[in-house]
Each structure stands twice: as structure tokens, then as C-alpha cells.
Amino acid sequence: MINMKLAEVLSHPADGIIAIVTQGPGEPHVVNSWNSYVSITPDGKLLIPAGFMHRTEKNIAANNKVKLTIGNREVQGKLSQGTGFLINGTARFLKDGAEFDMMKQKFDWARAVLEITIENATQTI
Image 1 (cartoon, rainbow, N blue to C red):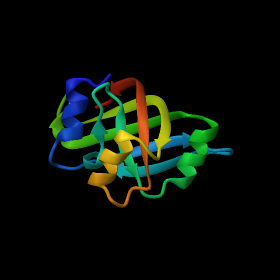
Image 2 (tube, rainbow, N blue to C red):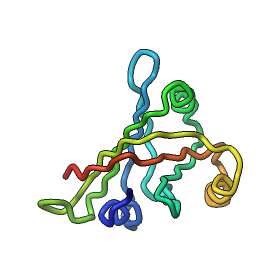
Image 3 (cartoon, rainbow, N blue to C red):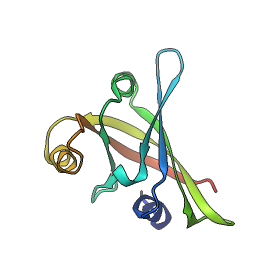
Image 4 (cartoon, rainbow, N blue to C red):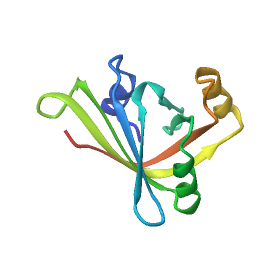
């Protein structure tokens, strides 16, 4: 469920930040990554290398629902320059397999890969 504008945000040479939100036992937990780290699978999943993200992994083991915000100020938005998305989906951590190996080649520091299955993506600006 990756539309053209979201793909443009993720592939734009000017990097942007991603916020990944999981639900912890008491409160939400937020961790950040970079747009340039994200790979899109042929079936539209997002792959994000995880160097740490231990608390995120623990939260996902208990509740795999995630929210992400992804943006880039250089991509044309709805009304002006700059756009962003709110993504709702499910997540899991990969520690082996072809997708893990591919991401490990790109990011040798990755201990795991966060795989996001998008349920919906809404352009917010």
C-alpha cells in the first residue's frame, strides 16, 4: 500500500526522519530512524535496520501494532513544499532470511530488521 508520493518521500535524496511508535506496558515508546535507511519490498513492506531498538522489539512481541510518521521537506505536499505521512501497520523483527541478509549487507551494524506491513498510509501535509 505504498502510493507514489510516499515512495517519493522514501527515495528522495534529501534525507528525512521517521518516528516509530509502539505501545509499551505503561506508555507509548518512540524511536527514530532515517528515510534513507528504509527499503521497500516488492509486496510493499518497509524494512528498517535495527541497531538497538531493544525496547521497540519487546513492545512488538507483546503488541505488534505500530504507527510511523515519515516526512520530507523537499517533496511537494498537498498545499506547499514538504509532505508527511502517518502510517498504521503491524511489525515484526527479522533476524535471518533473505531480507535480513540484504539489509545486513547495506547496514553492517544492523542486529535485526524491523519489517512493517502497512495497513493504511495517510498523507498529513
